[in-house]
Image (cartoon, rainbow over all chains, first blue to last red; front, side, top):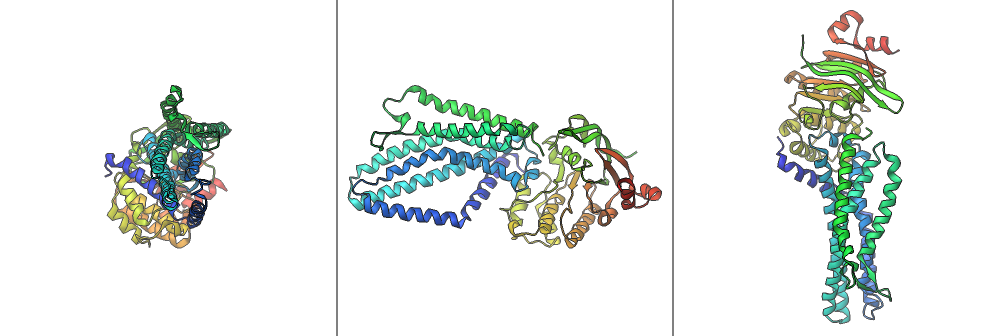
Length: 249
Length: 232
């Protein structure tokens, strides 16, 4: 007999493991990553010292992270339909909120692990840059501060995009499907908007500060974070309601 | 009078302008093996999905094991969905672990015995399985549960003759061992006719004919003959 307390943990673990395994088995993807890593190491070795290339520029990729969070959440749920397992999943004797929350948690964990790996990778590149070109060690400290700020912003804005991804996957399977273009518009606007919360580039294109951490940051910028969590919980409740009452099966 | 495990009254389900179920009145006797038969579009799968709460009726009432369908009730129903696949990231052993962790009444030892009986091995990857092998795994996952209601929606769909025979043999073994209400929706009538105690023939979302299989045979011929009489 399944232990009720362990059910959520198992659902989470099962989704996280299957999705991670799927990712790890894509050899071609790792080939691309390895090639990009080699290019970055070479570029840092050649141009890093003259400051014509700074690993800090790679943090601009954080603009894409909200979209990645959305994509992971969307695909974890969508796969139940595309793989033909939705009948098993939806007839499990557990509430829709528990089933969806486990998927949301698995998507969040996977997104956060990916972000963390990226930040560690960029940090190692910065370390390589400092060691190779004899830059001041204080640069590492500054770099860590900027990275930490980026990581913080990416982590706190992800729940909104994760919940939106889940809602998009659900709406696509209901009578409300015609609303899907609206969800995609919110996806594009919110993903982009959150990106601007993340960064405040200086005049020369170099990162001066993170907007919410900037000296002139308005208080409302910080308020956006709990507001986005509140909206995320409303989106999640919407997805639960749709899977409970409005699915077309 | 045999007690009913499932009672539906005036069930209606609409998909756009089409009524998949059109005022269906149905009773399924307890502890019997019931065939739900009919051509494509007769409403069989809609009815099966309704039992597990996947689909809700637009009108009418449905009682399953004395309760309205809900996610909680699914703890007492073992359901094989139609056109289902298994998780391709699993091995057979992982599928069994999935059952042990999530399905009430699931007996892992029995599941392992069943999959071996059905010609599968614990270390097989679902991803590399044929459709027949996957169908056997899914059936084993359903049969390994000790629950009062077993619902099998098209368990033989698209699989080869050998797999079909293995599955029927496993079903015969399973049904002789325990008291359980079983519903099977299938088009493979010749292979499965011997399993049925009761039959319900659906047409256009309503019951065209239902009754005890022995009595139907005595008056109208085999289940296959009745099928031809009703639908050809």
